[in-house]
Image 1: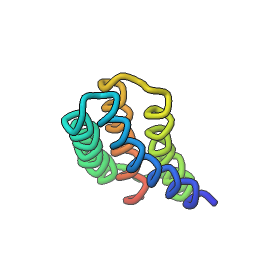
Image 2: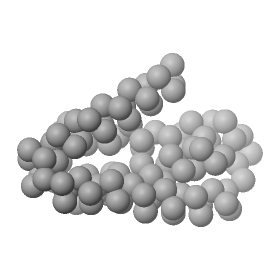
Image 3: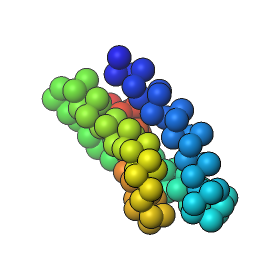
Length: 101
């Protein structure tokens, strides 16, 4: 169920995020900023994961993936672009740690 919810959140974010960026945030430049900050966050998360040695890797991995779902919530709430970029960066960190731990 955990992965099903994550896949649903990711798929809906990819589709609706681009649509909201086009319609409400000024177009492709906004979507590029949001997606790029996720990439930067993933690089940072990868560097964090190199040092991270949790005693219980599975729960740590699952908790690290939680910010990934916040992207869909943030886009649905109609938050401003800087907040969406910050949420996207934290999601990138979280998903990189989730996949590496």
